Length: 331
Image 1: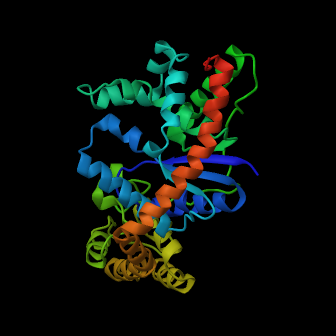
Image 2: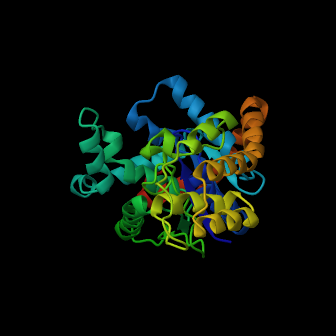
């Protein structure tokens, strides 16, 4: 069974786009892979979060992923900072990472432009920490989005470089995880494209969001003046609402409003009201599970403690081997 490793950033609440994208595929991964999922709290330090926010974000994202189906009995679920071996490998990889190649990473250059007052060493060496997170478990596969493809290539570079420098084939060269199907893309509510936090709070429906807020957001969703002739093509802002309805509503509901569109009888207020209730019906059970798990400190402690033990067992073996390969040995 292949080992797969993926990090989870503690950067705010999950929304429907996350659920139908990464989360559902993580649930599939744990069924047919030796899966390691970690909360990347060290990575988030590059933005200098407050201690209260950092801890709460880790707790929130852990509760959300568990509520969405990540099973700690099937996958190893842990917090990055609970596995100090990762930082030792990070240090060792940095010894063979070069300034020029790190400065050329697109995500680093983007951060330099976005936050010129906070260009820290953690941002520069972000790719080596990502590589350490993955290859510490000798992973064969890692799921990556478009924005992380270059970082995957850097992981492959560091693994190859280690093998070449020390004349070994110790580290597998990680490949992109292929989910075997097209990922479901959930549109945002502002009509601009996919759902996401970066586009603004009003663009996304969060899994932990209360019904009143969901109704308010969806009623404000962007629309147009309506169809002017039967069976005309839907503009993007309207197709977005139908695409969202397709994943949360019954097929009869979608057909009903599609027929109203084609006959030029559609009323967007009715469409939005129905969509809002269907979104609430879909998210309510998940929201209740999230809130229950978030409050259960004993359960969260057990999950992270057990996960850290499993992750450290894997990581410690790698560090022992790497030290021996490099020549760091006791007398």
